Amino acid sequence: MPLKRASRGRRKGGKGSSDRIQCTNCGATVPKDKAKKVTSRLSLVEHSLARELRAQGAYISAPKVLKWYCISCAIHFGILKIRSADSRRQAGRLY
Image (cartoon, rainbow, N blue to C red; front, side, top):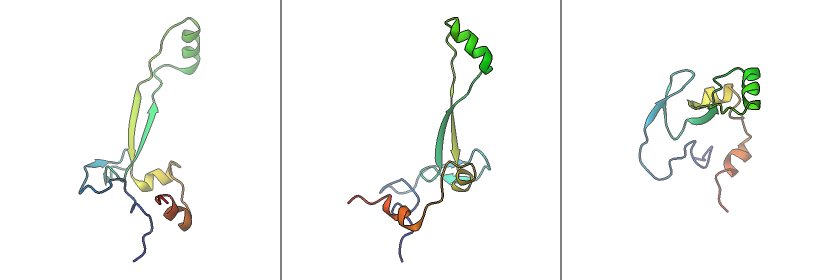
């Protein structure tokens, strides 16, 4: 049977099973190597106030927020795009 994706939709390589995590949006339980990881920064201060503080030389920390999305939520939020069959298969080949 032909493969839809060269990686079979995962990035685990040759190891057996992997840990499971919950999707940040819907709460679905997804294998960690199949879920999409998104790192973003959280602003703790309003933008205009932050600009004034930076002008005075203050350092404003912005902690990193780590989010894991299942494939359907990643497509819904635009993190992943739907690709054609040719581009799906060619992405994992190493010739």
